[in-house]
Length: 193
Image 1: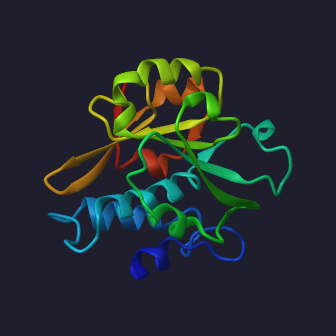
Image 2: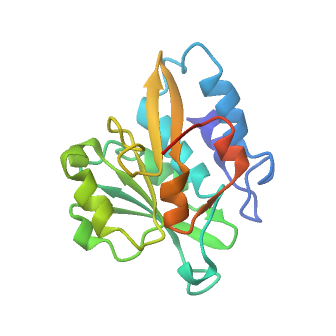
């Protein structure tokens, strides 16, 4: 965890240790995706928590999404929380640009008032289309690891193959939500939809 947080931790300016353009995500892509398998002592959702943190650095939201420069960037979890304390530990005290990070947990989509990155748990897989329909018109980056998540309208899907975490990105779904995803995030991903 210490090695993961060392690379994930932004500097005082709110950028990754290597700067936004070279940030941890590229190292994660090379290290975790390029190796035969992830380190055995690193739980899957600990890695995914770090990825969620880094997604916030590689996506641009419309300016009106943030009322003020210090408005928190909210990472939410809808449904059963597979992260435990990992997500909270990963973002504690961190910022993306001028926005402090906050974690919120939701049991129902109707509870979501402000959210920028939303992890939709596998417990919600049977209701995915309904959830995405209710989020229509929002500027929320939806992330999940349920089967077919990206092809069903989610934006970023985690796929674990041969102990490697990969991403599938639905660019059409991102554009529909007025989100711009950096090419640095797109390069290691499989584009769908």
